[in-house]
Length: 77
Image (cartoon, rainbow, N blue to C red):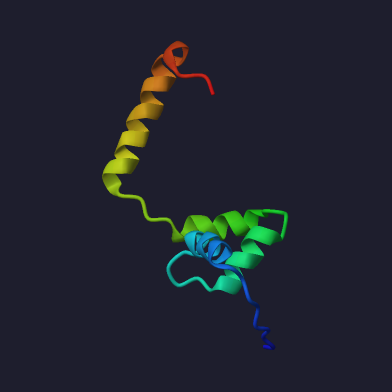
């Protein structure tokens, strides 16, 4: 694969680095943020890298159950 070297200022680097996930290349970050369209494939790729603790999932289940039982008290978004 051919590569190009670019020069960016420190502010641009900090912004780019803040979006970089562990193991992700800067090229992938740029492509992810500049392509313009997010596809289902992109979403699945991000979702596969998420790690959620069991207790967090339990709390989500509890909240969903409460809202189903009493939808009038559910906050409106």
